[in-house]
Structure formats: structure tokens, C-alpha cells
Image (tube, rainbow, N blue to C red; front, side, top):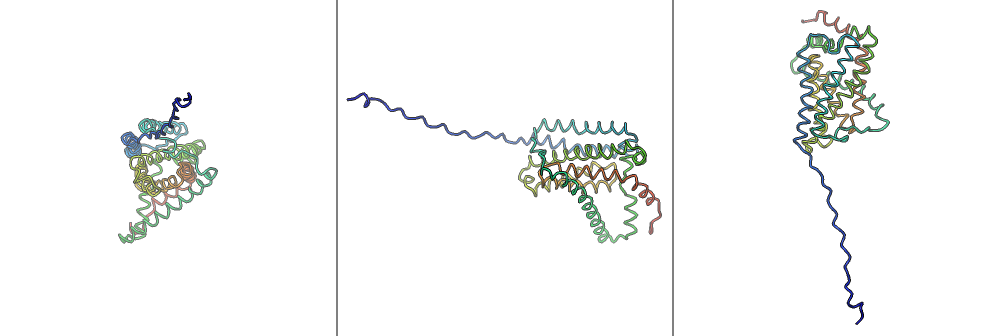
Length: 289
């Protein structure tokens, strides 16, 4: 018998089974801490601002004071945001920080800024018509109410300095509008929405759920404007909802950042002309008043 017949055939080793990638489950407790911090920020800002009403404009009277306020505001949000991130370790995608939709971001932001102003105006008109139909309030009474409860812009900014101090004017139109308003507040909104999506993915993970989350965020955003009166709270709630919808549809904060920044910038730009007329209307006699 040959040696070959006694040679054992060694079977080839079978390939090792592929290992399933380990996916770390989302910690709802950590995201809950994140969301609680984000929810507390506008509440603290709103009630603190309301308590300080009458102590002068929040943006002070001078360019130097405005820079100090901006630094404090950035710290007021930056430190809690950092703590929230340490809790949740939110990713770039969680916070919708990717630049979408490419070169369309800027033109879309400009168009959205105009559309938000028109849309907010339409919502206000519809609301007034509904209230008048239900309560049978006269047009004169509505006008009187609107003038008496106009946005208390003087609690936010010194419009005399806005018209007489170029440095103060341009800091408001650029730094305050684009960074403090646009970037800072939209970063808060994306962080708040990320918390809702991560804790309740079935409720807020879809596009429709994201719109519902934007509605919840807008209520907190409105409260943050208590210092400027109830009319501004209502307007900020509507504007905040529209900004949240834009953010949800594009899955990016950047169209909302630009739209928000331009909305605030144009508002500051027209204030020196608008405010004297509003004050004149406030001191006019009203029919039926």
C-alpha cells in the first residue's frame, strides 16, 4: 500500500462567522439631561428678562455695552450647550450641522426671510379676524388693543442710539442679528429638536414628527421674548415655528440661520424709522376708547 493512502486529508478551515457590528443604544437618560438643559434656557431668559423690564434696553445704549452684552449672551448659551453636549454627545447629524442644500443655502435663506415675514403677517391677520368674529370686537377696539400691546422694542434696543450711533447700528445689524439671533438661537433650536427626536424617535423622527417638534420648540422660543411683551411672544412663537419647519425640511440649520439673521437684521434696520410712528400712534385718541 502506498504512502498516499495513509496520508490524512486535513479539511480546510471554515471562514469565521461575520460579527454583527455593535450599535450602542441611545441613552435616554443622557438625552433627557440634554433636553432639560435646552428647555431651561429660554425659560430662564424669558422670566429673567421680564423681571428686569424697565431697567433699560437689554442691548444697552452704547456700542461698548452692546459688545459686553453679546459676550455674556454667548456664554449664557455656550456653557449650558457644552454641558448638554457632554451629556448626550450629540453628533453633527444629530444637530443638523451639515451644510445643505449646497450653494442654495444663501438664496433660500434670503427667500425664507421674506416668506417668514409675510407668513407671520398672514397668521396675525387670520388670528385677528377669528378673534373679532368670536368676540364681536370692533375694528376700533382691535386697533386700540394693538397699539397698547405693541412689541416693547424699547426693552430690547435703544432706537435713538440705533439712529444716531453708526457703530451701535451696525453691531445690531450684523453681530446681534447674524450671530446672537441667527446662529446662537438656531443652534439652540436644533439642539432642542435633537433631544426630542432622540428620546421619542417614533413621535418626532419623521418629517411630520419634526414639524410637531418644531411647534413645541416654538412655545419655548416665544417665552424667551417675554421682556418685549405678549405681542412679541406671540410673534416670536409663529416665527420660531416657521424656522423650525425650514430646519426640519432641509435637515440642516443653515437655511434657518440665514433666514433668522436676515429677519432680525432688516427689523433692526427699519426700527429708527418705525418706532417714532408707533409712539405717535400710541398717544393718539382712539374711537370708542
